Length: 149
Image: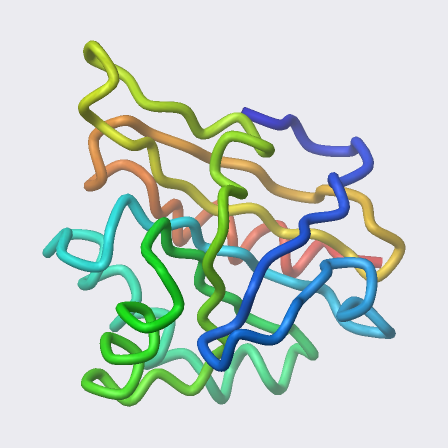
């Protein structure tokens, strides 16, 4: 997994409408919190997304753009996003491995995690786990947001 205080890779993803999305094109004056889900069918990952959605106004007030990255195709991601009324961009693509989230246990368990990237493209928080219950570090995210310059 990536470590903090390093430049983030310029992720090239696709949104649920099939449009390209690049991290460098979407930073502007905001920090970006990327949540990488194990899969849209993972109940624990879905619980973490519900928590992110519940904090939507807090993230907006802190000028944080939240993005959810899923390993599925854009059609699956679009259906999943609509069913759950997710207000954040949901992106697809092969970004998990580009940030160090690999498949563990003989290639059967996709790692999940969170990365907070500031407006300059520097990673301010990075956390990952093979077991999804440990992939969402709410206290660490909050501390990293509060420490943003």
